[in-house]
Image (tube, rainbow, N blue to C red; front, side, top):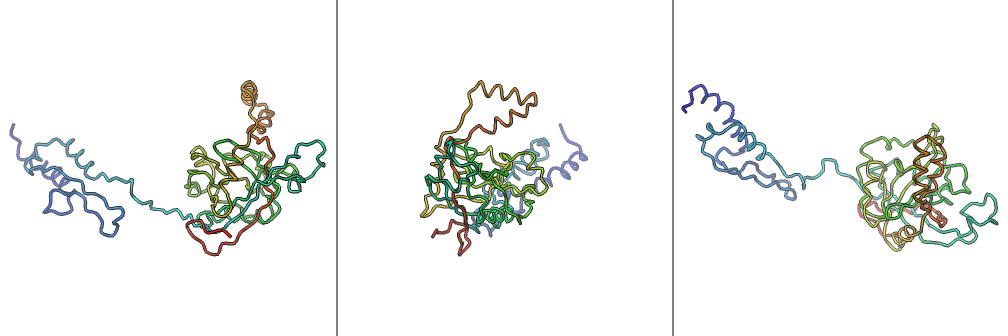
Length: 330
């Protein structure tokens, strides 16, 4: 069927110029995208266009031209660099010595005795953390300010999910129970509500993260206007923990050097924990469903290490030169 002259003019004014707009070089009908000369690492490949006579464009349906246009403009973004680079420069180093106190649950233990003065302490070893101070300056500064004080010293590792992470630094007024009282002068952490602070993932063992989604502080403590979150978690491996992503702030990592940091993390991860029976879990879920507050209190005992693991010492190691890679340790 012959087309009218008005139909031909309409097609040439809409479809044909749109197709020509895909070609950067009017003399070439093959390459539909030209790579940038300044970025050789992420060079885009040209998308080959089939050779189609110009006269045949008038007889092609508009749906074909639309699909051809979208496929020609499609770019593989798997190798595209992020527009916002994540600066994981290690600006500070914090050490923590972990130990076990076998006499913690003994009946003859002096009332009010702190874990830091455990008489029969069994050292597990030292872990050195590198902090991402440029990416998360407030979180790193508060963590660094808490360590040299006696706040973290004697802190109990109160939760251990085997194959995932362990938590320490739960707040409270009972320091003899391994709870933490944050020092004065901490900065109010506005990064906890900043979406950019949640970009790093819990992708490997030894990731240091600020507890937000897995925070075990009591609700009345969190409602205090002077509340400062100092509870942290460390992933133990062997694999990543994607369930922690987007809920907690990754602000550091375990550094390897002369101290066997990951060996200490692994030894903590192998400690058995309290696992309630299935019947107890069922009744606890039912009690929580009907609003019984005792359910949450009982649930706080779950996943607790059966050995008393605590932070026996904590402090800062000076960084002579900030670097993206873990610096050599003293």
